Image (cartoon, rainbow, N blue to C red; front, side, top):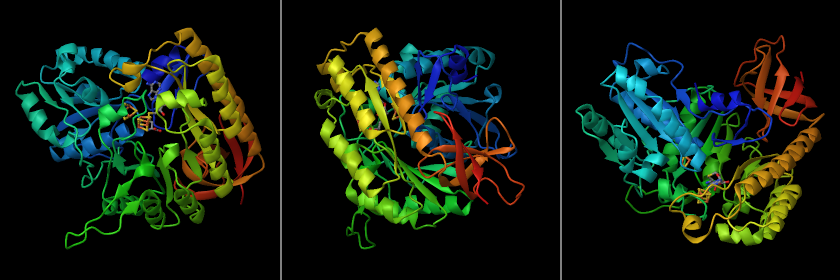
Length: 499
Ligand code: SAH
Ligand code: SF4
Ligand code: F3S
């Protein structure tokens, strides 16, 4: 059972976000699309090829889910096949997240559930991967006795060695961060995808030092992956039938790669705008998305590139964090309220039909009521189509933890968060109401969850649209169709095929 189910059972609102992680809010709603703790395995694996099995469960952002596919590729070469069945695993991996305390608690709780398996099977190895491994390092082995391997996000190439060490009873740790590692040459094994949309990592790490954030410590310095390896991966995906790629990174807009010429000299640098263009040119039938952008880096050049190509989706995730200039400064976000609003205006001027979403943190250190009101006001101004909303959780070692006091009472944080969520609910409903009667090009991703006589797909703005299947049997997942929106709620759009 995943943590997501536990929380749903307790009647708490589970808010999934586009990175895949979730927050629980004490409000009376349910939403169950989170992939947290999902056990991943390819849908078509040959059980005869592998003699040993690994089980991997992923938490956190899409980068972690993408990394699990790199891990799968490395383990496949060692003769380990993926399984969704814990009982038959020789190796259990948990790919972890440290972004908020809650994320770490979820993983700790999950680890205790593996004790029973370890008792049954003395040979079973348990490994902790990802950001918690990086944050806690060898300390993890003292704190969680059943763990055999601790492997940070830049050390997955050493997994074969670490697994063999652990097999002979040594505790194995590698948490070295790298300035170069991008796993460029490793073809990820697609785990549990829908066969239509895939994630492609284009850069790793983060050089921004937002004061609340643990990522620069767990993921290390920014580095960009070779553009040719990205293009090859996207091209192969398209040839295999995929119709959408999401270019992934903590901060995709600062992608910057200088390819080497055959004679070793440097050639013209590839910026994010240029990479976007190159991927878009693979085929007009391949949609391109990206995630996630720091507002300071999303340049006009990127916006104009988006404008030039229909297949670059008109959707930008533009994390706000706070609407108060004073708080933004303490957060080290490098922009002011006015600057952020001007960026929204710029996006709307160049891309009038662009969807915009945000991340928002309630109750950061020193936040006053007037700061909170600023956040609500910017939300109104920007009219976010949706948002991922959290209350501040102090992370050890971050700038904020060292410099500022986490002085907003929990009850106040939660009340403010609740107000932010309510504001977003109104904005999302209004945004969906504006779509009524409009016709969108929708990429079909598969059957709708509730009814297999209906398709589910997304429009360019990243909104899910559900619509009845037609008698036209030529349509499959991966087809593009025109859909007129006929009904909406705050969470979904429903429509009819335009024939
Ligand atoms: N690189 C991405 C963010 C990754 S973390 C970006 O800059 O857009 C995703 C979101 O988690 C952040 O945007 C922020 O809203 C939230 N977050 C990060 N640290 C947090 C903390 N300590 N407490 C609460 N929320 C946090
Ligand atoms: Fe964290 Fe800021 Fe980097 Fe995003 S940009 S990962 S919030 S430090
Ligand atoms: Fe979490 Fe690490 Fe991603 S802290 S959000 S898994 S980069």
